[in-house]
Each structure stands twice: as structure tokens, then as C-alpha cells.
Image (cartoon, rainbow, N blue to C red; front, side):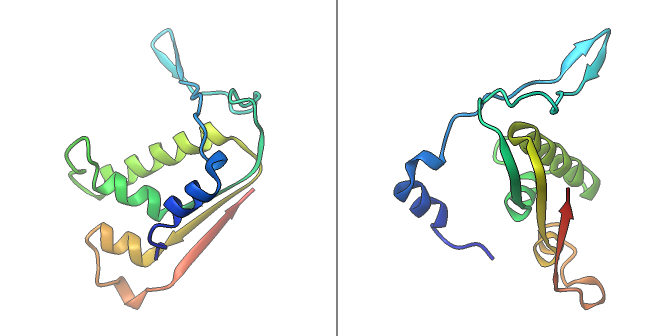
Amino acid sequence: MGVPALFRWLSKKYPKIISAVIEDQPSNVDGQEVPVDTTKANPNGEEFDNLYLDMNGIVHPCSHPEDRPPPANEEEMMLAVFEYTNRVVNMVRPRKLLLIAVGTFKILRVSGRWPPVDGCTNSVMLLVS
């Protein structure tokens, strides 16, 4: 569960936590998409060791987008989640740790599969390094 108005409070108290991002784009070579090389230096001029992602903040806008119709099915929603996650990771380029927090309750509820299957209401934390 999120903390109401936490982002607003943090950004007012610490305004330097928000910064513009230069986002590298994949290139096309002979009709083939070449992904961004995230091993290169971050184009924003700042390197980050760690990235902590709360997937609730990614799942909701991917399942209920404001600028287009919602995904037709769960597969489309998951593809949107993967694309957005890749975009965020490519912008930040964490060098040591990527921590992804996934709340199964929220994912099941947003995807329309609530009540939970087999009573699964706990959260799962994935650690990728």
C-alpha cells in the first residue's frame, strides 16, 4: 500500500531529488532494432549503484493508461509492464543492484484475477544483481 502524498512531501522538502532525464533510444540498423547499450556511461552524467522499483507504480499505469485504451488482455498488460520496466532500468542503469518489489495482491487485483488464487495474499521480493 502506498503512502498518500509521500512523493509530494519528499519533492517539496528535497527539490533536488527530481531531475530531467536524457533517455537514449534504440537505433535501427538495416531494419533491425538495436537496443540501448547500458554498459556505456549514463548520458545523464550521474552513475547509480542501486535501483529500487516498486512494481505497483508500474503495473497500475500500464493496466490503466491515461493516453490510450487499456490493454485487451493480460498478455498485453504484461508486455506493457516489461517495456516500461526496461525503459526505467535503461534510464537509470544501476551498476550493482536492481531490487524489484512485487505485491501479488495488487497485481492480481489490477489484472482482474482477485480474489486470489489458492489464497495467495503475500508479497514477493525479487533481488536481481
